[in-house]
Length: 166
Image (cartoon, rainbow, N blue to C red; front, side, top):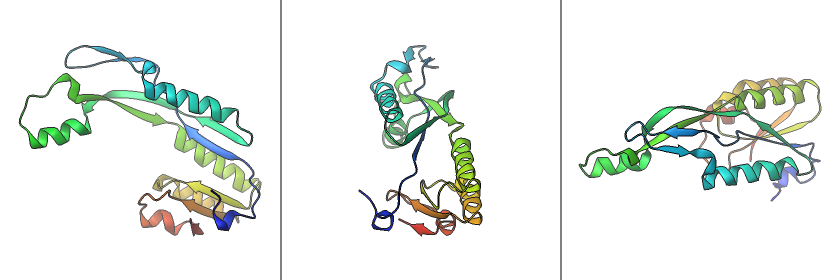
């Protein structure tokens, strides 16, 4: 659905940033079981989405990488352990996967679009305060920066650096 403020604007390109699924096996530190994360339904759905978007007209998919930095108690286990007293089991742990390189790619693309004056309006779909420097650069270069939060709560500082919050 197009926002009314964007109804008359011509789209330059949609940039989509994500990391492909983690393609390795991880070993649970408690019981030693190994899980191949590339075979999960979530990984397959993520691969299909990225492959489909790469072929969409007017889309540019920018990929970072996922890194595994160990294990932690999962949210469900933390909630459950707060209510019931029971021993911690191997199933309570989840791998800690983190995206790398995605924020940098977004910032570089914003800077490129702004400095080359390829667009007049930039619509940034985020709530991440890491993008404030890129937003400030885009505005200093004369772009209008619209912020789409998709209904998620966003700290004030991010909104301050947008011309319009959609």
